[in-house]
Image 1 (cartoon, rainbow, N blue to C red):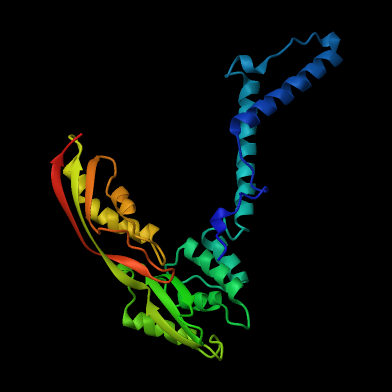
Image 2 (cartoon, one colour):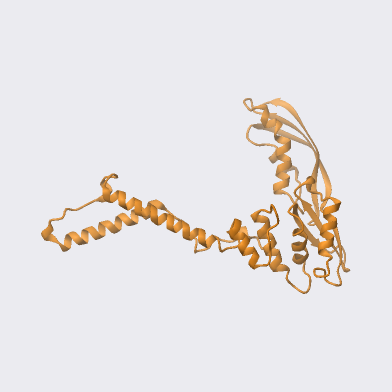
Length: 291
């Protein structure tokens, strides 16, 4: 799937520098003033450096005009973003999605909606590609965080692995049934495909670690480590994400933690590209304080 976040910033969206706008308008004024002074020697106009005094009325007008120009450029930038799938948000994104035949699910984030729009475009094929089933699976419920489509063998059997945002990533039976109904609908399923919807989470990872804090670190930092580790897997992990020991240790060492000795798992937990891991028990032992 196309990762819209990796696209370069479009040239139509410009970098805005207020100080540069002020400097340009000051230079324009100085040039025009000097031209008028030279063209009218009988008026005995003095050389005039507008930058000498911030409270000069001309300087105040220049800054006001530069600020007005900056706001106009910001408005143009925002209008450009509103017409780009990778940049639009809110109602602007809803309108772009509608052009692709996609409607936002209740509570669906902008990022999730963008991903479904890309899947909808990539999946429109009479061959029934992976993206086609992934789009329809993810369109069932906003709780679906990810879906991966694969063939476990060489036959017509296709499995769709589902990862949710709730329940530790494991979908319940009603959600699996709803997804199955959606992807096996005659208007969706390719006639030769045999579809099975399964939970992506196939591995439970238990964590045990000893933790030392720095001398001045409040105990609230230790108390929040377990929840922080769980949140990190929810945001960074997903289908195909390896739960490595180094990754766990790093997430258990926010500011204020001096040392972590990870005892479980004893090895990296490597996942295949269609499976996901979830944390089971997280047992952290406070060992004291050290530098």
